[in-house]
Image 1: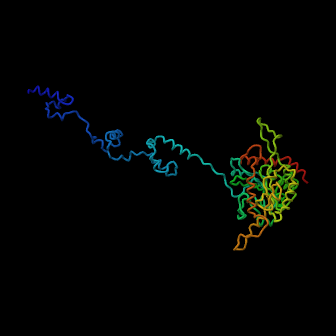
Image 2 (image 1 turned 90 degrees about the horizontal axis):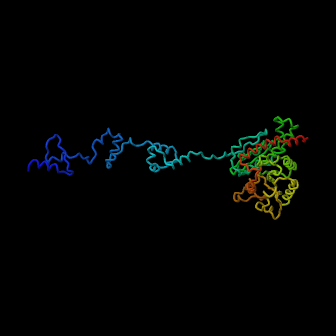
Length: 473
């Protein structure tokens, strides 16, 4: 075969029928074709991708991840984002959003790279950032509402809420009748508590021996059941008059004597309670003082009328709107054994109904002693009465204990239920009384406080009370 035929065959051979000219311009033979084929990329990546100086390059990292998916070399520590570290710190500082490590693994990759966090995490953080509702201030003792100088005090407003379900209970009575003690027991104290822990300070032995009094002005206390208790200084008290004279208190020029000033001051307190209270307790330690009943009728006569509600056009119509009067409960404190008999109890009811027959105060159908649950003798089968009257025995009588160690439950028959049984019954009946409104509009606790402040200011400036003062001797 000639050399020309061999050259033609070599040009026609190969997979694609294509030959490349040998490098260097020299002639080639069939044995050396394999060394001069087209350059094919190797199956494994080149060694240059594994060099240390190219690891930080983004292009090299992307090429390495695309071409070599089976590489087992660990990712460098410099590639970890810093965002998860911040999430872990917030969890360690008390955050409630992440409570376990499983919550971190559920965060999308976009969040780890600085993108917007999921909507659920944002809502949880928003709820966390909202301020919690603060509870009202709890008081262990009473605070001043009106001081001994007849000035209004604002510190009680911190205990009041913006809600309408509340009850206002006030108390009036003579000196030493037990007003503060009864009010403290109704507010939450028990007979086992010492006197120094009572909500309203009671008379100590030293004060009792000096014929003094404990309460000056009006004290206020608010319980957790939203009951507002008001305790007043004693009515027609010689101790109050003695305090005015001995302390050289300045008497306003419109009052001629200290006696008139003390009487007008007591009238102001009773008029105030008749205006702002739902329930008023009239406490007596003996039956009965007609001067106290006449004083109560005088305060009712001088009581300011209920402010009318504004009409649709902004004007007020007081002609067709009635006045509001509180419920009155007559409490016979320190009652004796004979007071629990049917004859004496019936005589008390008849006397009060006769003296206060023309009163507009709500004195019937709310608190009853004749339910048959407290005493067997005082039950509807023997006593027919609807007057709000209740009896409480002497407080010290229930504290006597039997000296017999074998029979500690046996006690001397007293002729009436125990003091604890009766005070619990009185508390339940008072707290279950209807919580009627004092004005023509519904008031919240804070609105009641501002309404009471306005009423006290109007009572002090009352022209009717000034005219009554000029008629006094």
